[in-house]
Length: 84
Image 1 (cartoon, rainbow, N blue to C red):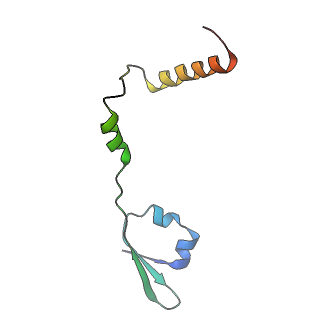
Image 2 (image 1 turned 180 degrees about the vertical axis):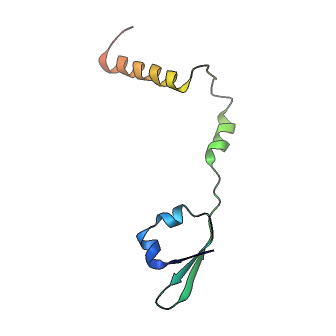
């Protein structure tokens, strides 16, 4: 368990966003425990959505770089009116 002062949290709020262990918030003037902060275990929604819509997305044999290149070429054709 980590012990952190209120001022430390105000200076660096990333402490709370990257929380992996229990933190004890302490008022250093009064030397009292103000709060106990526990990490939240939020699951990623990506896995849930990937499973739900997996059947709707057609598969491809192209790599990610090839897909980016094709999309870039298509965007340039639309923007500048080029024909292939």
